[in-house]
View 1: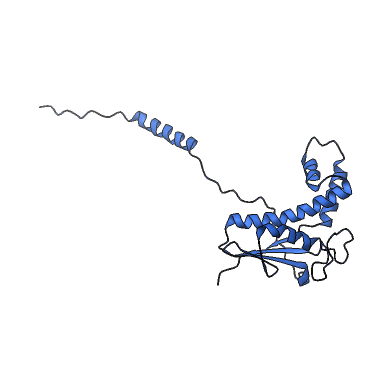
View 2: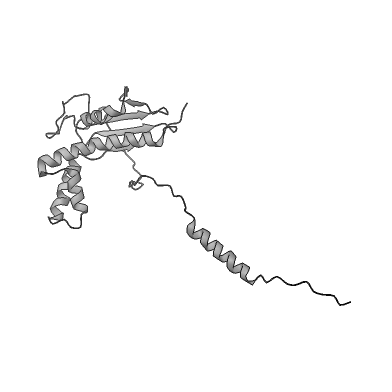
Length: 199
């Protein structure tokens, strides 16, 4: 009796099907990407003799793992942080003839010397940290807007928007000089220290 060979399965199209499935999954799959804060970090520089700061020129904001704020050794609510930072930066001490603060001798000398130091615990929630940082930046924005309106008739935010607008009709070089003037009057001296370990 003759031996019959088993019929072969045509697998020629299997490779095509597998390839099409692979392309389908590559095209339809979404890849999650973490979005962070758009922040420009300064270049790494070795500073042999870092500048010394008077303690009164440093505004210390501490944040613990329970999202509680300790500002200048006093417990503070988030809603009060912006005004406290404004009062510190714009104190009106020595060398600031445009400041509108009370001139408290225990507070900052002037906006150029004032440094806001933000420190947090490793267990601090990300959203709470960003909320605190936003309040501190908002304090600087308030002061810059106020001074820009007084000197140039429009807010600092409007000036920056005009500078970034390709359809702006005015003088870009004059606008750039005005923006630089405001930034020098109220430099953004915000120091973000390394997170603290819980003990």
